[in-house]
Length: 161
Image (cartoon, rainbow, N blue to C red):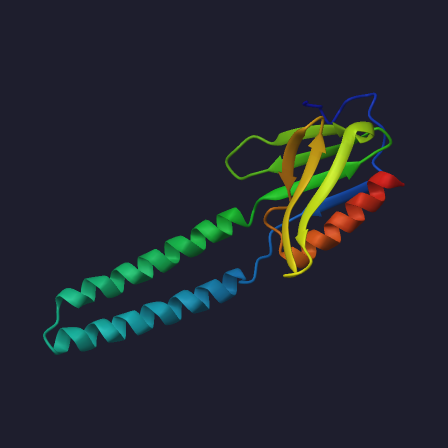
C-alpha cells in the first residue's frame, strides 16, 4: 500500500527514526588508505620488475583498482536511508536508495506485527520484519545485530503505546 507524505488526513508522527548504515571510514581516511595501498603496490611492482617478474606488475595495479572499486561501492551503499515514522493510525517506512526513486510503504497499526529473528542459545540476531496480513517487509537490514535489536525494542514500544 502506497501513501503520499503530503496526505492531508495523515497525523503527525509520534515516533520517527532515520536508519543509516554504519560508515567506519571517513573520506579523509579513504584517501590515506588508498595512498598507502597505491604506494605499497607501486614499490612491490618495481621490486618484481627489477627481478625480472614483469608480468606481476600488472596484478599490483589491478589490486589497487579492485580495492578502490570495492570502497566506492561501499560508500555508495552507505548513502541508503530508511525513515520509519509511527503515527496514531499507521507505520510508514520510506526507503531512500541512491539512483532510485523513493519507496514508501504504510502499515496499519491495527494489523501490524513486528518480529525480530533471535536465537538466544547461540546469541544470534536475524531479520527485523514488519508483517501485515501475512506479508513480510524486512527493514533495518544494514544495521548491525545490536543496533537492530535496539531499534526493534524502540519501534515495538512506539507502536504498542
